[in-house]
Image (cartoon, rainbow, N blue to C red; front, side, top):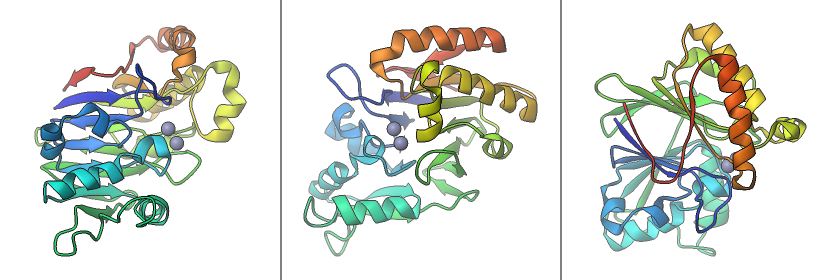
Amino acid sequence: MKIRILGSHNIESKDTRYISLLIDDVLAIDAGALTSSLSQAEQQKLKAVLVTHQHYDHMRDVPALGMNFYVHDKTLDIYGAKAIYNVLTAHLLNDVVYPNYLNKPEQKPSLRFTEMEAGKAVTEAGYTVLTVPVTHAYPTTGYQVTAADGKKVVYSGDTGPSLADAWRQISPDLLIIEVTMLNKWREFALQTGHLTAELLQQELESFREIKGYLPQVVLVHMNPLDEKAIKNEVAAAAGALKTTIRFGREGMILRL
Ligand SMILES: [Zn+2]
Ligand SMILES: [Zn+2]
């Protein structure tokens, strides 16, 4: 499995992009940096996009992908919770802000939405995709993607702590998880459903207790303004856990 990190931040600029991961060029998770990172030809290779939740930084390219697949007369599969479908059709693909490519063109719509159910696995493009609820402000689901050779990657989506239930459902070789802000913002992180380095450490301790091992860990969704200081705090957490924790960056390629 080849995982390309297209966007790994929570703030967009010339140097940082919103979250998008690309697996083996065909399966994307989150749509924060798909159209801005991928050429037309690369976009046409996409078979499906898994969306973790309805926040703008994770789903905003869905309408743009609709347009791109419309002009190529092709259909792209979008997977996510019912809440994401509701937000897309009410606020973005509502024929006011943008055409509703979920029903255009009539014979063969450019986007096809499939509702994902928590705890239920589906097969898409040769991968088994398991939907795993996490703890964020809205219904948010992480995804475990298992390749044909059995290798597993999990992306948490945005999440706060208390992930023991999620850990019991997954067994990743690679865990891509968020750390958004500094330890001093702990209360704000808890209120908004995000992780700090200390909260991540606590969750990884819980993972190791429940699963008996730690996977490779790569972090995304950092606030770029505090990234240097977040890295120092994460280094302390990694030291306490006696493990290595890497930071995702735009253009990074991970192999399993
Ligand atoms: Zn969010
Ligand atoms: Zn986010």
